Length: 161
Image (cartoon, rainbow, N blue to C red; front, side, top):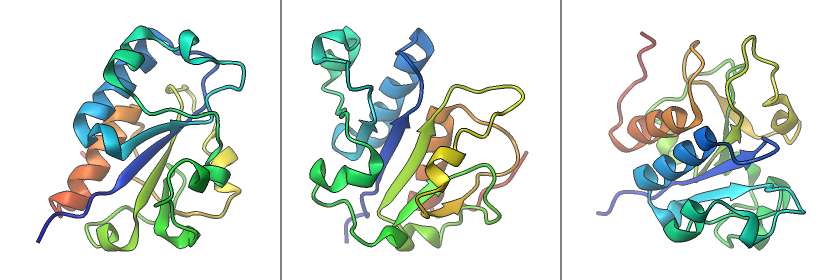
């Protein structure tokens, strides 16, 4: 039996693609595979020629489309929002290995760490997706994706250091 392939969507919430964002997004693609990773909500005025060359060379999948209309981008995107998990530091429930069967897509706010945090994930919370956290510590986006994948594919319970 083959391992379930989850999809990972970063809702891009930064005004540009800083060097740090470029590194994180390219690492995420390496970690989860090109066909399992999307960047959504790229600002409408951004054209392919405006994207970092590294993204184009890597074949990174991106779209102007917001997560609420994502089925037009990926037909496997569930109509049933309960199959989508928002990784949210404010969630009351921690992501667990059992969640691997419950969710098909994992949604992350592509937010560079703010200190103190400004809760920009709240912009996604309003859509009512089931949410989970990854412990109490703030993580980079690529680390959060990697930890999510490990929990779901290796069936490892998260331990907050």
